Structure formats: C-alpha cells, structure tokens
Amino acid sequence: MSLKNFILTLLLANLSFTIVHSHPQCEEYSGVVYTDECVKHDKWKWQYKKGWYRHEEVVCTEYTCKNLGCDHNFAKPLCPVTCGNCTNVVDIVNSTSSFSWFVKFLCVADLVNLLEGPDHFTVFVPTNEAFENLSDTILDNYLDALWIEHLRSLLLHHILSGWASSDYLYNIDGLHLRSIGGNIIEASIDPLRVNDAEILTENITAINGILHVVDNVLLPTSALMSVADYTTDPSRDYTTSEFARFIELAGITDLFSSLDPLGAITVFVPTNQAFRQIVGVVDESNKTAVRDLIEHHVIRGITLLRDITDGLEVMAGNSEILEFSNVNKNIRINDDATLIQADILVTNGVIHLIDHVLTPTNLCRDTNKTYKGYTCKDMASSKYKRSLCYHSTNCPRTCGQC
Image 1 (cartoon, rainbow, N blue to C red):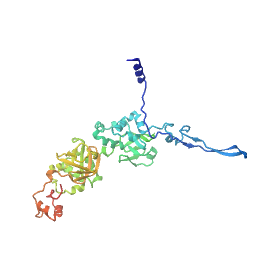
Image 2 (tube, rainbow, N blue to C red; image 1 turned 60 degrees about the vertical axis):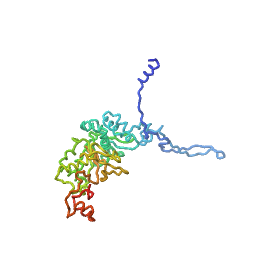
Image 3 (cartoon, helix red, strand yellow; image 1 turned 90 degrees about the horizontal axis):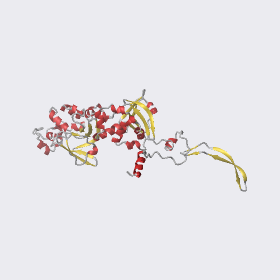
Image 4 (cartoon, rainbow, N blue to C red; image 1 turned 90 degrees about the vertical axis):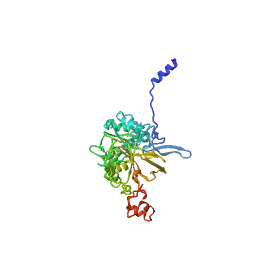
C-alpha cells in the first residue's frame, strides 16, 4: 500500500458519519418573529428654518431567530434550528433502544415517511417487551410480506391524527379516539390507559407530534377476529350470519377459527340477502354439498383488492376455478357476484363481501322434478317464468340462480 493510500485509509477509519434527515419543518422564519414592548423617547432634531425642536420617537425592539430567546412558547415552532426542535417522531423512536421492534415494523410496513412528514400525529409506542409478549408466530408473520397489510393495520392502530396530550386524555374517562387505521381506541384514567395498555411515559414531544410509551400492543380487529369470529359477531347478524350458519352446517367452523390447518385464506362471503336468493338450491342436510358450497368461496393465501386484475383465474377450495373481471374497479366473480366491501382483515386472512352466492357446478343443475305440472323446460318458455321460478327450487340454471 502506498503512503498516500495508507494515510487516506487512516483518515476514513477515524471519521464518524452522521445521516442528517431533511425535515420540511426545520426552516427558520426569516423575518421578525417578535416585537417587544415599544418605548417612547424624546429626541431633539434640527431642521432648516425651524431650528432645534423636540421630536417624540417610538422605539420597538425587534427579534429574529438570531436574537430571540427559546423560552418563548412561539420560538420553537418558528425557530426550530436555533431552538433544537428539529427532532421528528421517527428520530425519537429510532434513538431509543427499547423501541427497536416498533422501528423495525415501521420500516417493514413502509410507514417511516408518514411519521417523518409535516403532518402532526399522536403515537402510542409499545416497548420491546410489549411486542415480545406476542407469540413468536405472530411476530414472524408480521415480518412476512404476505401479512404486510395486517402489519400496517396494527401500526396505524397506534396512531391518531393531531395532538392528544395526556391532559386531553385525562379530560374524559372513557374517551373514544379513532386511530388513522379506522379502529376505536378507548382512553381511561387512574391510571391513564388506552385500551388494555397503561401509558408508562407521557408527552414526549417532537416537531411533528407527541408520543406516549405504552406497556402493551394495541390490537385492532385484524389481530383479534378470525373469519368465524367476524361472521358470527352480533353486530353482523343481518349481513353475514347465514354464511356462518352454513359453515356450522358443514361442520367446519374450526377451519375458519384459526390459521391451522388452512393457513392464510381469502374468503368471499355472500351477504344474508344473497343466501335468500338461493333458498332450496342446496340440500342443507347434505354436509358434503354444503361444504362444497362453502369451499367454493375460499382461496388459499391473502388476495387483496389491489391484487385482483381483470382476467384473473384462481382455484377455489373445492378445486373449481373462480374467474374475475375488473372493469373500472368494479370487481365481478364468475360474471355473477360483485364485490360490495373489500379488504376486511382478520387474524387468518381477509374477507370480501359479495352480493351473490357462488354456486359450484355440481349444485347448478336443473332436476327432473316438476312444479305444478311444469318442468324446467316448460318454465324456460312460459310467460309466467318469473313467478314460477320464485316458488320453484328445482330449476336453478333455468331460473338464473347459478
């Protein structure tokens, strides 16, 4: 090694490199920030033909960021560089070793830019110990790209829009706050808590928000409810209870209650109204037929709305193909059912609500039975077809129930 290269290597080894974040908030106000109380002074002036005369002059002391004291409450936001107020939310959590899990998850979920930006947030930051109280399986899943939206849902459940200091949280016992993830957080006092988490450290301020350290991870719906839990929840008695009933008839509720043994699943859940349209098409006493119907609405893995492209074909749980069309974000399945609510995240996957039941091929056959002397063929050509189909359950294909 030449002497020149040796000296260069030695210099590099002794230099410390610091990454400096560029914060849009960290710009000093260029003009007069504050004007002190003005004082009147008598001053003598000379003017031609008038001679000396007394003149009253008002003197106001003007302060800029260069000479303003940072103890003024308006100094920090206007003079952040001078007053050392350029630390944002990400800077704070990144500089604290006990928040390393939170930082890691922010990076994986691509939420760092959100908390570095100009918008103001309140963030409930769980300690590493809080995250480690979750099972290893849950932690591993959150680091898996398959579960990225569930991780985002979890983190956004810890963030409120705007400032919520401890004084504000203490104001009302049972105060309801909506996280930017859309779920409700309840604050309680004595001691100060949010949901089941106690606030250990209050009011850590940053230029773009305020942080509270909590001793438990706040869990949103996506981390609390499985497919079975969601469809049987009393609040959804009028929307998804029929799907839950069919799962129970098939004797497979356990398959929809946890990750085992199916793993992550995507379920297209018909509404109760959709099931009323096929009354009698499925023999509810036939477990095999009911199970086939349910499995026709399930695909393996997590398929979100953004993943559904026009012409997509995916094999359902009963080994039949589901065909998707996506025209102007109007998603249809098998040219029949339409997505009416998408991306409902649950512990074992994702739910999409649809407006029609997807009927498997083996259930969509006209029978040879008649209704009031009419065969299915007779119904097809009858001017009373609509009325006959309303009462008959023997001709699903003829009556357009497939």
